[in-house]
Amino acid sequence: MVKIGFTGSQAYPTDKQIETCKNFLIELKPTEFHDGACIGSDYAIHKIAQALKIKIISHPPTIKLKRAIYTSDETREEKDYLVRNLDIINETDEILAVSDSYKEKLRSGTWFTIKHALKKGKKVTIIFPDGKKEVYIPITLDRWGNKIDKNIIRYKQIKSLYWAIYIIDIVFLFFAKYKFYITALIYIIVIAINRKISDYLLEKYIIGKKIRRNLIDECDIPKGQWDE
Figure 1: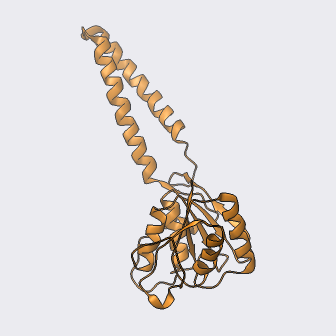
Figure 2: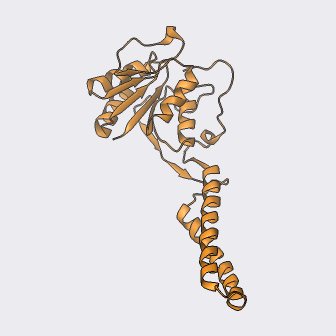
Figure 3: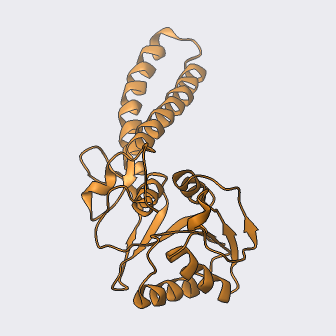
């Protein structure tokens, strides 16, 4: 039951891109296909999803001149390009992107969507003009780019805390009449706090695993004119 979000340039995709996208949708068999209702890539891949009888939900832009004319199962409210791109990310499980270049383009709505999807923890598949695809699966990295295993972090933290609790336990052995109950309470409180702290640190440093290092740059919504 996968919901696919689509993003692509206003340039019409190449034949190889169309073929790769078609095979991707056939293999994945998504239950929903969310597109930006724009000319170019949106229009081309929309027709494929329609032919495969996938439920289509369109997120049209406010600029009517660049809207594609086609029918959808559902149509969302008109919004600015970048805002509607964020809606597509939030309403889907992963993103399919068709790029008209082999590297990131500045002020590109497509690459804006790719970066934000990765920051949101969504899997992204990028189809390049030659039809080749690259899949980016979000993982947890620290600030130096090293992979983090959440379970290992928690194990090490809890192990270190265990020794601290053990020392406290010895103290209570001599000074507390109800040592067992107090120690159990401390265990519960400390482990609960530890999980909250580790969750916060991991969430703060979640970025995507990408070949292009500059994709991990900050990508807040900027002001000014953007291309689709």
